[in-house]
Length: 128
Image (cartoon, rainbow, N blue to C red; front, side, top):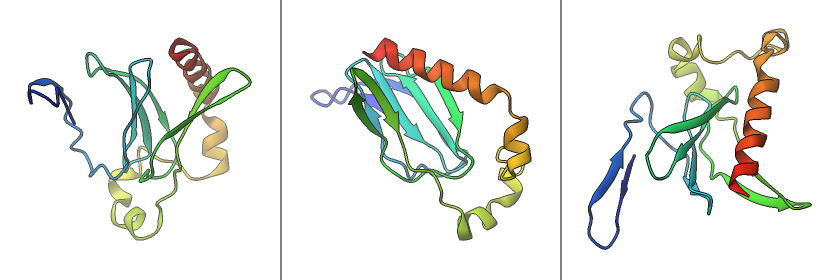
């Protein structure tokens, strides 16, 4: 992923996202955060000025959709559709086995999910 100035073509930064193809679109907020998703299920946020990853969330399945943002009761939210599965999931099963857990028991064991949600809320508050 490359950020450049459209009028000059000058590169600002480059972030290699080469572990799998990126089929997800990118969304940039007015607060300077860029959201995109990876085929291995990571929904990530990058600082638009530096290109540094500031947040991520493992969705449990690949992402190939456009992130969207919306406001409800004065708060801004971001969401993305996750759920490629099927043939791609079977083809990438070996690579995904340590990154994605599909059972309810495994998801319940992830106590850090609440912490990730809290971090996402804080990030969204910063965007506002």
